[in-house]
Image (cartoon, rainbow, N blue to C red; front, side, top):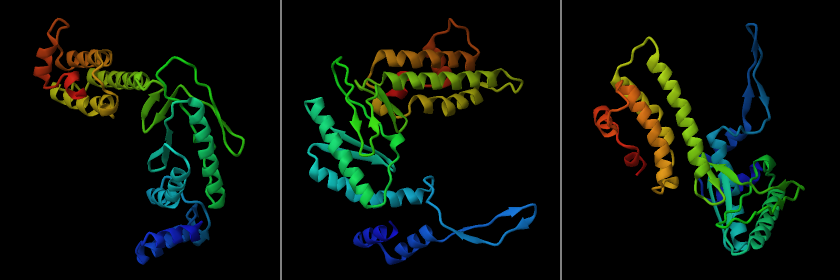
Length: 269
């Protein structure tokens, strides 16, 4: 695998100094052990590169870049997009059977390439979803070369965004509402303790801890649906009453001006 990676780096005209550093990074691993004030001599070890290392993720992307080119050449209408090691293969056809057939062919190409290039995919991370606009039940599955069956799911999570079959983001909004509610209740407990936070501090806590949860990837799922905004409005109104110590009969717009917090519709837009 190292030799193949070096060949790819040379082909991409990467600086020789950087290539030598990569070789050193992949090979020269040393471990030091210390117990009860006794220190063992340094020892060279051979181990896999940790997935948490951002360097190994970059090298992984460089290593498999030709796989996507190979798949696109052989599979028509296939699109691939990824973020670091989260890779998605997307096929759009008029028939679900054609989609499944092409995906099976794609996985066969990918696994064959992986066997030839010392790459191992994590079977537990394979997910399948069919996006559709009708009410038909789509239960087509895909069998990998290692006889692992990937079943179709109703909803999947990609980059912290929940996607369902109709792409209406109901599951994503519901998940965010639960997260915002849980965090808001924790803030309410903090506001009720003996620290006696002032309104300015409570406002800063709300903006720092709540809005960043609610508006995460808002440009993707927000499509001016009133029922989505209403749920967030109820939570923000409860926060406004708590921050300003106001009566429930006070107008919401007045509290927004007093607390200098924009309406939900504004920060969603």
